[in-house]
Length: 252
Image (cartoon, rainbow, N blue to C red; front, side, top):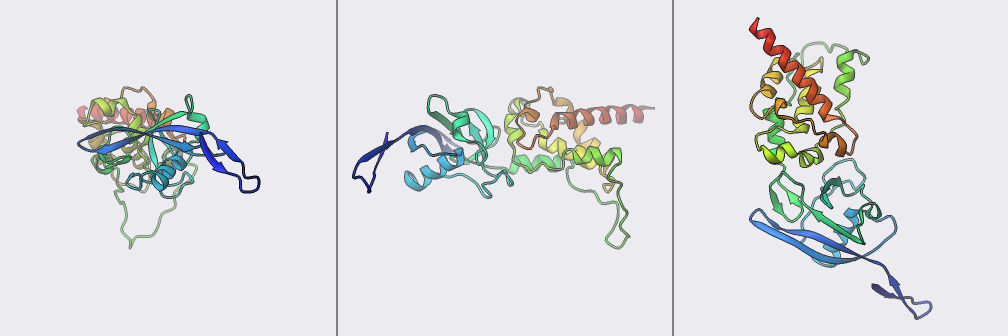
C-alpha cells in the first residue's frame, strides 16, 4: 500500500496501489519492468505512465500530446490491446489490480513505449493515399455536393487521425510485412470517392498489387478497435470491389 501522512490528524493513511508492468527496451530487445503506482480517481493509463516517468524513472520514453483523444499519439498496447491511453481509464482494464503497457504492435520500437511510425506512413504513400489534384490554383473552385453518394462514402473515413491503433490490431500486418494495412487502405478509399481527386485509377493500381487490399482476411480487428468508431474493413471491401471491376473492364 502507498502511505502518506494526514497533517490535520497526524495519522498515516493508506491508499491503494496498482501493479504496472511497462515494457522497456529498444529495437535490439527488452522486457517488462514492474512499478507500483498509487491509484487515483478517474485515472487513465496515460496518467499511470506519466506518474512512473515523473516519480520513478525519468528515462522512460513514450509519446503524448493533447491528452483528450484528439491526436492519437499516446496509442499503446494495454493488456495486449491497442488503445489510446489518454482515453483508457485504468479501472476499466485492471485485472487483479494489474495492468501491462507495451509499445504498439507491428511497428519498430525506438525506445520503451515509443515506436517508429515511418513504416505506417510509408504505406500511405504506397497506397497512393495522397491527394491527386484535378485543378490548379488558378482554376475556379467547383462546389461538391455534400449529399452525393461518393461524398457520403468519403466522409465515412475522414475522421482517421493516423493513430495506428488499427495497424497494431491487424493480424494480417503481423503475418505480412508488405500488407499496406487498414489505415492506408481506408485513406485510399476516401480519396477514391473524393470528387476533387483525379487519381482514381492510380489508387486502384496501387492497392491491387502485392500487399494490397486483397490480402485482407476480413477479420475485422481494425474496425473493432478503432477509437473513432470508423470501419476500415468496409473501406477495404469497397476497394476489393473496385479493383475487381477495373480488372475485368481492362480485359474487355
